[in-house]
Length: 73
Image (cartoon, rainbow, N blue to C red):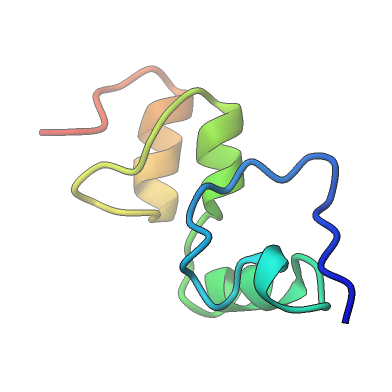
């Protein structure tokens, strides 16, 4: 099993079993979980120089970050 990360992977949660470093399926497992839970993956929060708020990785929390609103109430 080769655990090569994508060149764009910015996720720091290596303890997560879905992290691409922990299996050979790339981003697929993480993305499937995020889609199922209606969440945005941490790599997109990282790319936007943000972080999950108390709202976590929700679509709403990401929209607030992108639109310049506060991510924490």
